[in-house]
Amino acid sequence: MKRQKALSLLQLLIEVVITLFVAGIVVPGLLRSDVATKEALAGGSLHPINVAGVVLSYTNQNVEFAILGA
Image (tube, rainbow, N blue to C red; front, side, top):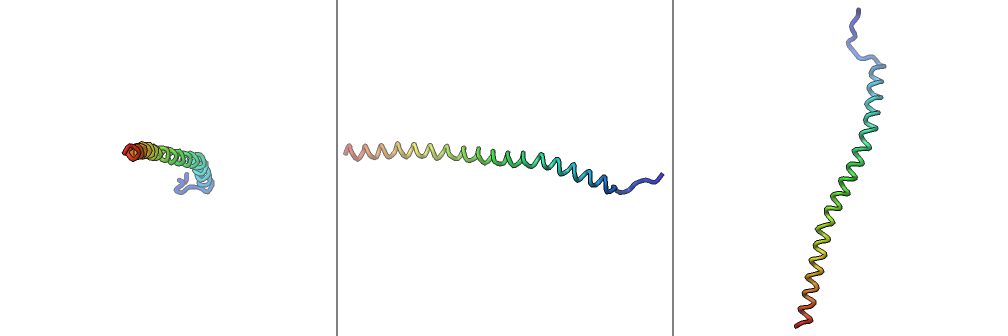
């Protein structure tokens, strides 16, 4: 019996098809997770901006009252 040392063309084709099928399932999931990560980071960045706005508003009110009171 002759021992096969290399992959046949059919075996290679089947492996390529399976690899492309798995990649077709995995890649969209990775892209969605990337978008979700960016949305979470953007939401986290908005919190300090909101806090800074509240602090600025409070500070401006105090300055305004100090000017009016003087």
